[in-house]
Image 1 (tube, rainbow, N blue to C red):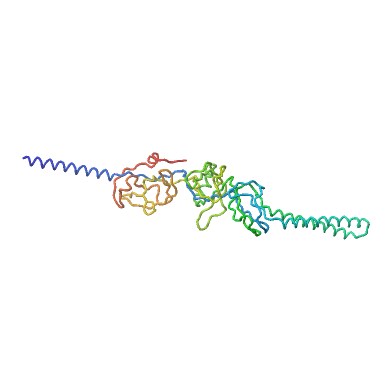
Image 2 (tube, helix red, strand yellow):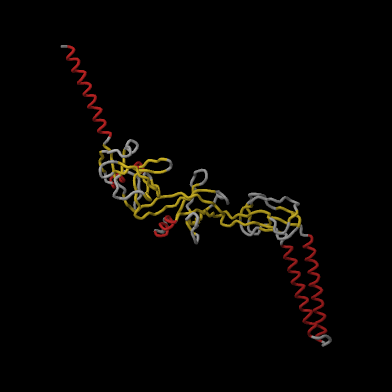
Length: 358
C-alpha cells in the first residue's frame, strides 16, 4: 500500500513539473509584435570633414638671391604688413641708384632742351624726345624700386607661420617656397552629403538645420557652433555626393589647417519610416527584421538603414508600413517558425522610446 502511495506521489510531482515546463514553453512562444510608423522627424548625422583655414597661402620669393634675414619662427602669429624675410638686396639697391641717376640726367637734359626750344634753337621734336626720355627713366626707376621691394617678403594678412623649409644664407630662386601663412581666425569644414540628404536639407532649409557642430579627433565637441554657408555647384558623378562647407569660429586658435573632424548636421525627414532598433538584428554587417506572415510564420528580411536616432532606425528600404515585425524576442525566434504574438500599436511602442517628432 505504501508503495502505491509513493508511486502516485512521484507521478503527481512529475506531472506538475511537465505542466510547468509546458506553460513556460507556451509563455516563451508568445512574442510582442508591432509595425513601422511613418512620421516627420529629423536625426543628427556625422560626416567626416577636412578642416581648412579661411585663408591659406604660399609665400614665395619673387627675386633670386641669398636669404639674408629670417624675422619669424615656425608657428608664430604675425600681423598684416609685418616683415618676414629679406633676400640680399645689394644688386637691386645698385639698380635703384643707377635708375635714379638716369632720372636726374634726363631731367637736366629736358630742362636744357626746353630753354633751347623756347629760343627756337632746337625743334619741338627735340623737346618731345627729351620728355619721352625722362618718362622712360622714371619708369626704369619705378621698376628698379619694385624689384628692390621684392627682396622684402611681408605678411599680406594676420595669420600663423607654417614650416620654414629654407635656412639663413640659402640661395633662393625666383618662385621658391619660403613658408605658408594661414588665417585661422575662422575655419572651414568641408564634408560630403548624399543626394537624398541634400534634397531633404534644401527642402526643409531653416536657420536651425544650417547650424552644425564639430566633433574633434579626440572626441570632444568644439565650443561654438558652425553654420553651413555654401554648397558646391554639382554632384560628384562617381560617389553621388555633393560637398558642403561650414564655417566655425576659432577664437582660441584651437583649429589648424589640415585637421580632421566630424561635422554633426541635423537631417530633416519627411514621411520617414521608422522602427525600434531592438526589432532588428545584425548579420555580416547587414540589418534584418523578422516579418510575420499572414499564417503566423516569420521570415527574416534584410532592410537598409537610412538614419539613426536614439533607439530608432529610419528604414530606407525593405519594409512597408503595413508589415508586422517581431519586436521582442528577435534573438529567440527562428526563420519559418510559426509564433503566437501580441500586437502593440507602433505609436504606443515609440512613446516609450526617445524620439524627436515634428
